[in-house]
Length: 230
Image 1 (cartoon, rainbow, N blue to C red):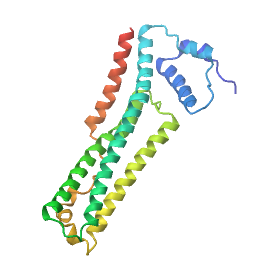
Image 2 (image 1 turned 90 degrees about the horizontal axis):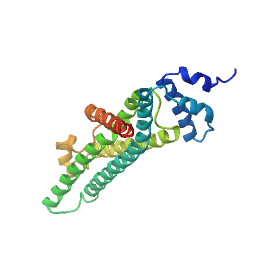
Image 3 (image 1 turned 60 degrees about the horizontal axis):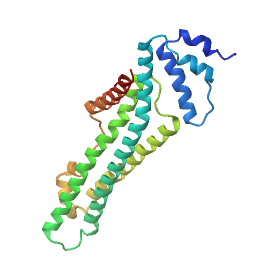
Image 4 (image 1 turned 45 degrees about the horizontal axis):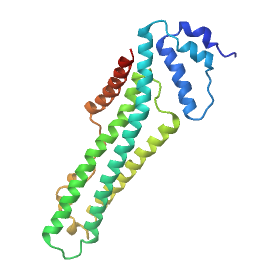
């Protein structure tokens, strides 16, 4: 079957159709594939009969670019912040267990449990911010005509980040539950038994308002940039 000549089809294509064609080709190239659209076809696709049509197309493209730069960096930063919070909580719990049988001042022992509670609170807060991006990704893609803004390589990398956090949180909670069920350990972790919710990491549930705000903000930045060019 012959490949359609986009130079002839371009004048009859809508903004959305042009965007889908160009960005799908762009994503493929980001994954190391050869371009499917020729230079002459691209030139035809990027000629717009009206300023309004150009603005609609350009806003989507800029949103795509901003999400690929700003969101990728933010997701990496949020992952790091979440992982640091996890390390602090895991280390503090380990100290509680290691020194459980030692005679230490009661105030110092209480401080360790308070520290663990504080670290878990910070971890729960960090997780919400981190997972807000995971919820926001498909919502932004809906705004971008259903076209992904992440190439397969970046999408796999981000999936690995979330798998890492899922794994360490699961391991941490399992350690808490295991010691809570251990008859010999119960005497040493009574504060956890009395208030388990303060010491367990909650399932990541992103705040819908925060998710919506992430999408609105990236779109606002794109619209502002296009407005400054007009």
